[in-house]
Image (spheres, rainbow, N blue to C red):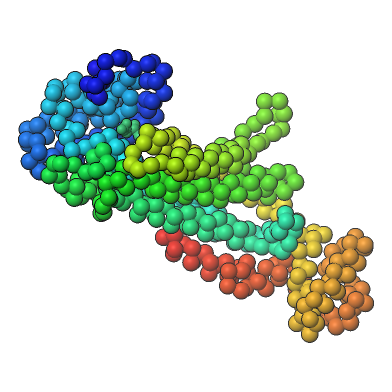
Length: 458
Ligand code: ARG
């Protein structure tokens, strides 16, 4: 008979059973469910609600189930619906009727809320670890390539040269925001729901404080209705994951572009690339492509949970069971993405020789020529127009700005002198951008020191 079977006289329809059962996906909550139940059983005894012997027998039973679960020796039953009732059924088989005392002063509604808080806390900590590893990989790549200059883009058109390290570090700042967002989610999770019971609290003299203390929570939900119906911390987790995937997806797009023959900036290591079943020459960036491709499902989970929550009356509704698969999948999607990208970055080769030739017949020093004219006294708008004409002249002659003769330049602006050629090489262009946060090596070295300090990286 079902745990709740008392008022029923007919068996549940088989399809109803399958449709309402969550054991297929909430089984991963088992270690958290057991930890929560142990804290609850201990508190029931210290509050005088069950005897110390009853508590001992329940806790021993639960510990045994956890051990057997870890050894893969537990069989779950669909008709026990979810992880909570499966554990209770197994506990009853093992220790007898005393198992029935565990659910005193508790409901599955506050139990599942507690389980999700405990799971989410671990998930967020694992995500923070993953973020830090990727930050570290990017910082190391930046430090190892402080001398490499690459074209910087707007509209994916060459704009101004930048340090490759500067480009890498932009992602580290994004990841620092991701990390801070995750720490904010940890704070949201740090609130203990057990003791709300079904929705209104309990008639038993429980100590919610004792349970919170044992499980490492610093605050209690102070409203039992809120305790069983709050999923904001999961929205926060999904938002943090969705934002992070946006960052990872942008990085991945660049890795895909950069590893193409057309860019030719990097080569992914063999260990992080894949081949083609028909074209023997191919080396494909499948990992960045898939991370980019998986971003959509994480966005989807965020919208799905918003939609689940938006029309729910207080307090618990079965709709809330739909919170799980999405957050589980989001975390299962982001965690390997972080690890794989860290590995890809650590092992990829930067094609320095190819990048050294990147600025032949390039006009990304045009702004610097305009700035040069401004220093000679021209208003910036006028300087812009003159350089536009010089670019056009150079294209007509099949050269770049440095390839124009001084007399050709003076024909457009007589103020121009021989020293114009000093501002045109890409190295000079880079070094001139020493404003705070700019791409000059001096500014990037300062930036590196700041980001390492703020991320707590060595
Ligand atoms: N499996 C349920 C969930 O995930 C547990 C809570 C069920 N509570 C209830 N009253 N049916 O939401």
